[in-house]
Image (cartoon, rainbow, N blue to C red; front, side):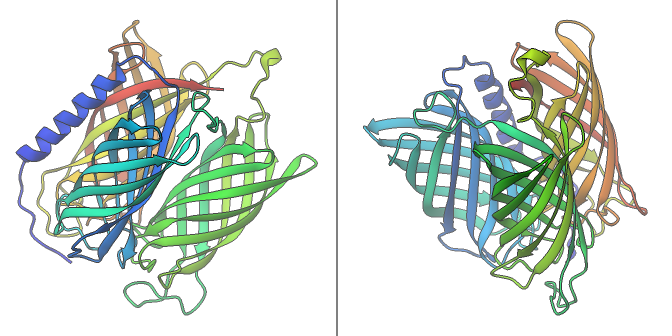
Length: 485
C-alpha cells in the first residue's frame, strides 16, 4: 500500500510528550535508590471498539524500583487478538503505586513509544497509553491485576479504552520471597528457518526461508533450570519480520558439554509471515560447549509454530554467549563486577535518495531507541541496540543492531565513544534492501551525576546489500551505568 505523507516537523503534541518523557526519566534517574528490585508486569488488554485487525494487546513491562512505590523502565506491546501478528509497540513507561489496604493497591502508569506493523498503522506509529490497575497481592512477590487504560496510536483508528487482566512480580533480594534475578549468560544468535511445503505467507505465496539475527539472555531459576529471553529480526527472506520469545530451559551436564531442552512462547510477525494474531510456540533441543573460560558456543535445532496462523518452520541456530554463571564468585581470580550501561532516548535519521520504497516525502524520521552495553575491559564494550518508529510516516519500521564500541574518559565528567553495528531492519516502507544494515556513530557523554549521563551522538546508517537507505543520524539520550555479578 502506498500513500502520500506530507513533509512536516514534529507536531506540538509529540514534542510535548517527548519533552515530558525525557524530563521524567531524568528526574527519577537522579532520585536516591530506596529498593534494589525490579518490577515485572504482564497482561492482556482488549480494545473496547476495535477498528482494525488489532483487537487486543499483550503487555510486558520491566521497571527499576527507584522507591517502594515508583518504578520506571520499558514496555513491549504486541498484538495478540485479531489477525495482526507483527504489530509491535515498544517504548518507555513509568508506574506509580498507592497502597489502599493490606494486599490491595492502585497503580497508575504512563507509556510513550512507537511501532506498528501488519499494515494496520499507516503514519507515525506513536503510541500513548495511560493506565490504571487494581492490584491484589496473592503471595509475597506476586499480585494479580484488573486493568483499564486509554490507548491512542497515531496512524490508526485506535483512540479509546481497553480493559484486561494482568500479573505483577517483584524481582530482587529486597523483595520478600522474591527471586534474585542473576544473569547467567547473554549474547548474539543467528537462526535459519525453513517452512515445509504448503505453508503460505499472508500474500498467498509459498513461505520463503527466513534468516534471523538477534540476542538472547539466560537467567538462573534454580539448579539446572533457566529462563530464556530472546528477540530477533529477519536478515533475509521476510524483510520486516520480528519475534520476541520467552522460555524455560532444562540443562543436563555431559562432561564439558551441556545438553539442553527448551519450550517457549512468544509473539511474532511482519514481513508477510502469516502468524495470525501473533502468538508463537517453540520447542528446542541443543548442546552448549565452552569455547573459553567466559564464552560458550551453543548449537540448537527446533520447531516454531503460530497456532492462530499458517506459519510453521524448523530451525537451526548458533549462539555465542558470555557465560556469567561460570565465573560468578571467582574472588580468588580477582573477579570484578561486570560493567554495563543502559541508554534510552531518540534518534533522528535523515532521509532522501533511496530511503523509501513508497511515496513518503518526509525529510527526516524519528526513532526511539534503547541500548545495553557490556564492557569487555576498561574501554571496549559489546553493544546491543533496538529502535522503533515515532515520527515520519514509517509506522512498523524497526531496527535491531549488535556491535562493538570503545569509550575513553577525557575528564571526570566527559567521555567519548565510537561504535560500529550490524543487524536487521525492516517495515514501514523503508528501503533496507533485504534487511541487513550497518552503522557507525560517535558519542559524547556528560555525566550529570555518578548514576546518569547525557549522551549526544552523530553517525551514519546504511543498507549493506543493494541500493537502499544511506542516512546520516543524530542521537540524544540518557546513559545509566550499572554493574552485575
